[in-house]
Length: 409
Image 1: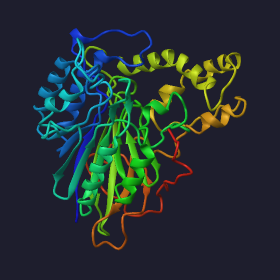
Image 2: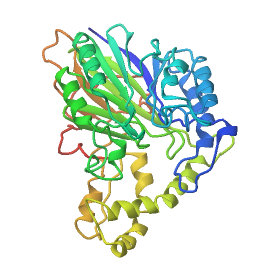
Image 3: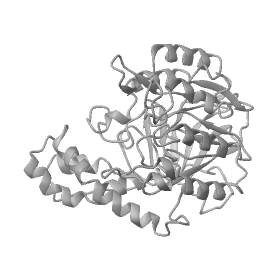
């Protein structure tokens, strides 16, 4: 089947009407810019002839009913379909309180955006002929009522049944928590693993079994593409933190029946109320990331003594904004080992976090099956609105477990 379609991804909007905004002295994002930044993005997208929009979670700041209502009403005004899944901020509690909706209420707000059956927090839809989108809720609660990022056994059973019936379609998955590591040793690192799906390996194995290799995530607030166990995890940064990104994708089938996913990324550098938004949030992230970097140095895998860690923090002031922006290369040559190697491992290997072309499979009847993975730089801005699949592969940047897994740009 020859597939050609275009869509966008906007993540972690953290929409907050003015009456719901509250300040936090250590937060590295500005919830008050979520709504105006979204309006800028939607204005830019209106002339791109999109087939649909994906939002992989954190539509609202703290699951406030008025913010969910605003979001649903705004999405209903779009000229193309939108599909959402909940983030940890959207359903932070099981039972409604004075601030947030109940866990069970989320699908009811978004019945027009994936949740036709409001009894379930997961869904599966053929959104275009031959194209299936599976939306997974990764937010569950343990016996103590603590929110965790995990798929239940019932969800995995349901997912396998859906995948078994969708083998003739191109399947994409959307889930809030990361399913591949975007930071070195993220699944073991205390600060990083809370952004990972606890049973990510189990999900990846299931997806690999059914030749599903494209997953869209959010939560981490960085621009990054990772490949692990044959699955691409494309995570998109937050609209309320530097660099305020969004993504545009063009899916194309070439003459050999190969499927290509061309990816480009835009930025919101200013909003009407904040003309120096990007510069200001870059500085905010630099200033407020100091405590985070200190923890990163003192916790596994580095475990540096506090005095030594404090001596390195100053050199890392620009580190997290560079990670969030994507496609960065790090070389702290003066750092002692193993700190030097650890931070170097965050480097991107080629321009792959923001502009790239991913080979994501074969059409039925093509010469080879969907087990080949390839990625090369590509830019919408270099050839605006003319989404052409690569003519040759001689310049392709090969994506391997050696140079991508654990990579963050």
